[in-house]
Length: 94
Image (cartoon, rainbow, N blue to C red; front, side, top):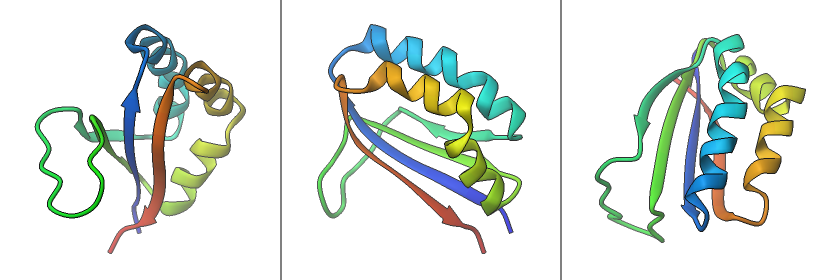
């Protein structure tokens, strides 16, 4: 089954976020990730809204978890520490 990241963030520093995105790109490519939603319009039907919403598809749930835990991604994530707040949830597809 495929795996998905559902990431929701409020970004305080767009320039730092760009550095994060560039540094994370190799981790996503190595994991076979496909971006299904990245930014764009969003409607918070329930719960707290976030300014930036991303859905990323992976070949498997394990690939999604491994990407998050990879040294390349963990290093990239340091670019947004303290400069954004939000959540990343990794879910298994149907």
